[in-house]
Amino acid sequence: MTAAPDLITISVPTYRRPSQLLHALHSCLVQDYRPLEIDIGDDSPSADSEELVASLVPPAGISIRYQRHSPSLGQSGNVNSLFARARGSRIMLLHDDDVVAPGAVTALAAAFEREPEIVAAYGFQDVIAESGELDRAKSEALNVRYARTAALAGIRTDPVLCALRRQFPNDGYLVDAGLARAVGYRPTSEVGESCDTDFSLRLALQSRGKAFYLLDRTTCRYRLNRSALSGSRNISWKFYDYLRSITELLTPSERAARDALLSHIAVKALTENAVRGRRISALRILLSGHYPLSGKLGVPKLLYHLGVIAVPQIDKLRRRTREAIG
Image (tube, rainbow, N blue to C red; front, top):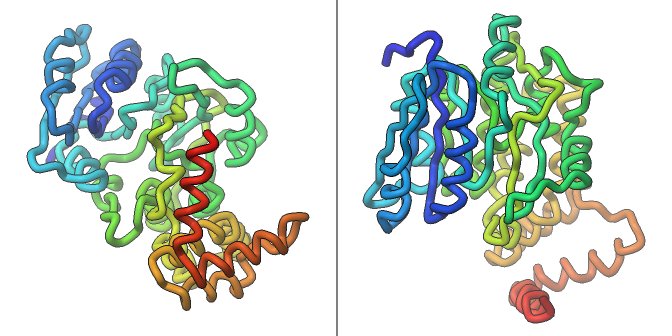
């Protein structure tokens, strides 16, 4: 596919969230960048989102394309389909429950114009409640945790570090379309539900010698949904194994960042292995040095996870108890 040099495509995968999709699409329609294409891939079983999109009238210079999938392609398949048919030279991925900050597309595109060697640009993420209300405290904490600060803004010649520190966000970034298609999303059968983080890391590994760009401004607003993946038991176990397999060509700083990320996801990866009856894998994580033993809850937590490895049903009982309490 020959990409239009100035056209930017905002790719929006969606599934059964028409009201939040409307908020996401409105944030795209008020962008001031031209020419702009909004491309929606709908995995929903009903026509609700299709009817919503059909009712929208975009302003001059913005086009809307819509495709409904039957059967559903799944998250990774939907994103790859959107990447494949994007007509712009650069792509922004936007989840259907998130929103683009005003002026973000123009600001991200300007970074590409200033720095021809970059292959991706992104900014800070705000956190919004399910209702759409901004949570300033959580926004600040999220950006500090993932190294999105004014002091680190600008051209980043260390893309692998950016990905391992999760500075590269899960959406709201602008990326070279050809590179996005070449890297693509891997299916849940390979990486579980860590496909966004997996994509950013493989994108970075293919971008050595090039650069990312961090803008000193908010470019995307991330919505905290009750239906998010926080309770899933298919997020980290496969991605943990992939991270451990990356050993060659890592600099000392990259290796330290990889180990820090392994430590961050070790508890979840251990639990996910345990509930699948993968006791040996769970024990290996427990003994790997990535499992955090420090802190006042170290011993009780260790005993709990030993219990889950021995009797996986303990995890399900604990989750049901939490749900009952509220």
